[in-house]
Amino acid sequence: MNQTDYLNKVVNKLVDETSIESGQIVNISWANLPSYLPLHSFPRFFYNSFHKHARDMYGLTKKEVDYVWKQYRDIINHRI
Image (cartoon, rainbow, N blue to C red):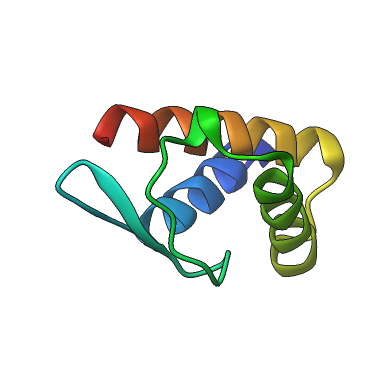
């Protein structure tokens, strides 16, 4: 498995851990807080929580977290 395959698996796992109902995010298991806003309007602390989780749980570098965040954000925003 190459690095991109691993990162895409991380993205898919994070997407699976995000519950969406009626076009709104209702639970994000790794963020420990419900939210009802599209990801593009989330405050900076949300990204910081994401970055910490991705680093601690999956051992990602900042560059890898940025890739995963973009993929995750785009998928979730598309589903909303």
